Structure formats: structure tokens, C-alpha cells
Length: 200
Image 1 (cartoon, one colour):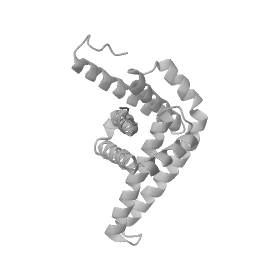
Image 2: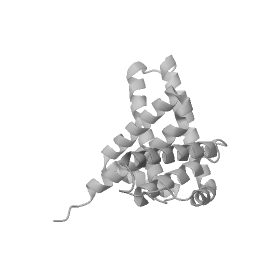
Image 3: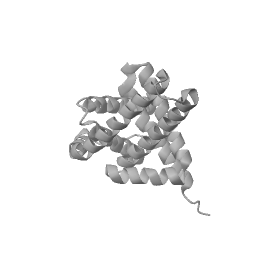
Image 4: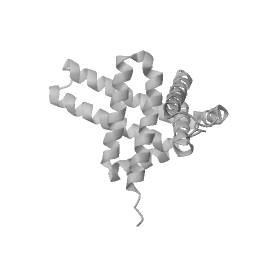
């Protein structure tokens, strides 16, 4: 838990950055077997949600328990994600090589759709972080995207930036992952605060 007022603000900032970096690294390592990726993302998202709500990350024992319980539900999410990624890669490569007709306009449209898919995935991950199951999170993310398209666009922008950073400097992928989760939850909390009715 943070000790506000007992140490300089920059120390809290450095501590937060270190926590997120470590969380990203642990989640990345836990995802290496691939079949565990869904559980790792779910546990990491819940940890970031706790940090936003309570001011600190949960204990590693708590996160480990969430990871283990999320192995089976997360497997379905992992399979769906891998299938989507494979289809996107095939489509983009086909457009870029001219195999698929459409040229530049079709490629631009495809990139836009990909950004929205990334945004939808980000909203889903945030919902999973609240403790919802993957299917419930998908439905909740869809409802949020319908009510507030700006949330979908913001999550897509965050995701695209994260992907570009990870592709440009692959070694930073674990750190980018932690930052991506943090940014998604921060934007989600900001949008939720703005949507609350103000009391006179």
C-alpha cells in the first residue's frame, strides 16, 4: 500500500513503474507455454484492477491462485485469440503482396478493423480484470463499445501503440504488456468517472 505524504511523489512513481514492469515480466513468462496465456492475462489484469481500486498490487500468492483457477477458462480465450491473429496475419500479408484484391484502400480498411479488434480485446481484458469470466467480459465489452464508441477507439489506440513498440523493440515486450494493462485500466476508470452523474 502506498504511504502518501511519507515519501516524495517521484518515489511512488518509480515504485509503481517497477511493480508494473515486474508484473509484465511475470505474466510474459507465464504465457510462454501459450496455452497458459489466457490465465496469465486474466491474473495480470485483475492485479492491475486491484492496484487501481486499492492502491497496490495483490499478493503474489493471490495472483498465483487466480492464475491457476483461470487456466481452463483462459484456454478458450487463447485459442480464439490465436485464430484471430492467424487470420489477420494471412489477410494483411495477402493484401500487402497483392494476392488479395483491393490494394491500398483495402489495406487501410483492414488496418482500421484490426485496430478496432485490438480495442475490443483491450476492453474485454479490462472487464476480465474486474473478476468477470471471459464470455461475460466479451459481452460487457460489446455493450460498452456500443454505448461509448470513444472507449473502443481509445483502447484501440492504446493497443496499436503497444503493438508498434513491441514490434520495434521486441525485448521490451514484457514491459510494454504491463504498461498496456495499466493504460487500459486507467482510461477505463477515467471514462467510468466521467459517466457517473454529478450530484448537486
